Length: 80
Length: 144
Image (cartoon, rainbow over all chains, first blue to last red; front, side, top):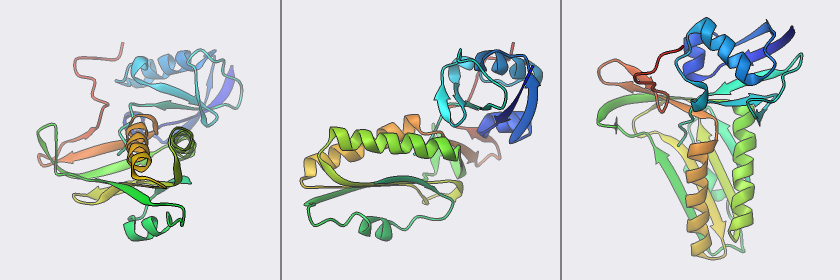
């Protein structure tokens, strides 16, 4: 198990009811962590509509997570 | 040369003054305004939310690309966060260049890339009281 911090924005923040949380997970990568959290909280966005960011930078879904990582799942953007 | 987020209203005159450059013969600016409709639905107001750290990094990368691709001398881009009403200025982009062609092209590149790459989200508030995060609808899809 590792401890990671997850920040939520926009639709995910509202569906989670939190802006951030620290949690323990056995998920080896961002894809597995999103699947775990989606199952737990009923997030409507499928992973193919999201991007992952780890420690303040875009990251590939299969990139391994390590203890202390900060993860953000980025919903479809809509600036401008 | 900067991309930044602002929780406060933008001042176009001050932003434009920051582009002043004796080498420039052209200045092109773009203002994105909050409009009162989207996809046929009346919109009353918007909320913008951003992942600040990554938004500023990605915005800086887009500006670096514009400087590489186009012969421009100065670029400024500012995006609002927070609650905005109809007519408010949501995004301001300004480009200075020696000649107009590069200034127009760079300005277009910047707004097009910002809209699809920078982690900023827009929640629309509709006249019927409903709200929606733009581009986040999942019609007919349910969590497995």
